[in-house]
Image (cartoon, helix red, strand yellow):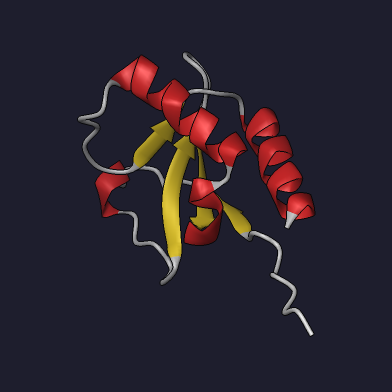
Amino acid sequence: MRKQKAPIKCYRSTIEEGRQEDQLTPINGFVPVLVGDRGEELQRFLVSVEGLKHPCFVRLLEMAAEEFGYGQRGVLRIPCDAQHFEQVIAKISKSK
């Protein structure tokens, strides 16, 4: 019997005022990601590492590289609106 994979998990949290991005502590097995377009308030998500290699998430990573380069420091930032990011995560979860 083939073992079924669990859906990709993603948690949304808020950034506390006065706290630096790189001070955000991730949960074991999750990567912190800041999501937001220019001029938009950043939303913090914790994404399970299992989802990072999915083609949809890879495209988001490519967008980040185009916008910010490969030398980002601190928490990974994705340049898209939070609603679109949540839709991508939902699509990844359904494909598992």
